[in-house]
Amino acid sequence: MNRRWLYMLAAALLLSAAQAGAAPAWTELAADEQKVLAPYAERWDSLTPEQRERLQKGAQRWQAMTPEQRSQAQERFQHWREMSPEQQAQIRERYEQFRQLSPEEQERIRQRAQWFREQSPERREELRKRWEEMTPEQRSEVRERAQQRSEEAMPERRERMSRDRMEQRRDFGGGMGGRR
Image (tube, rainbow, N blue to C red; front, side, top):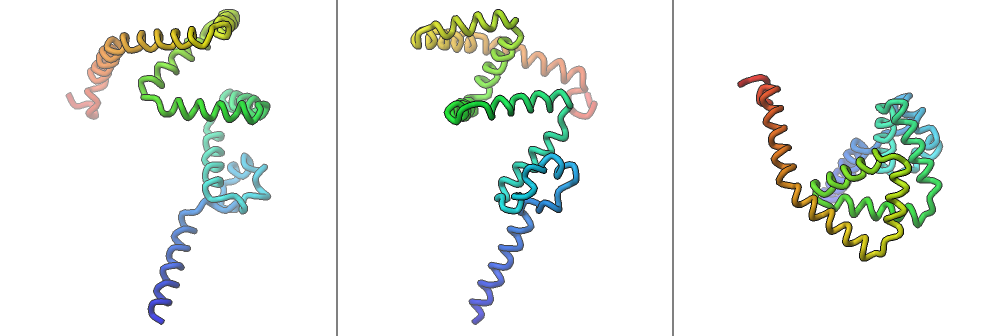
């Protein structure tokens, strides 16, 4: 009898702990969160706690955005919805591959993408066309050369970053609350 009672007590404690850490019920959301999440109102309680938490965090990020950022996000989302499931799967796969890269390689790719975005529309189109006309071998060769240039520039970048950090420390009191 004691054992059964202990099991029931343990189950009750686990259930209450799980409920305490669970995502909020619809009525527990702030009014502005409910407004953003209104499309999910009717099925909110049927969502998993993980889905509710993810949606709540998304609503909080949305509220923190500027109107311009919101507009850009809506455009990206619309573009995403217009893609085929195969295109979406390909993008998810590429994103996962990107996440597996080293921070240095990710930064190199971000910088290269920023450089590309800064080009005129005509120049971007020209570069896209040239890339599409390349054979897979030529594309691989271009990637390898870019990787080599990146690795060769790495010591220079590290030195520049170190120099920048030293200047920041000097300018901001060594990062120690102003102590020198």
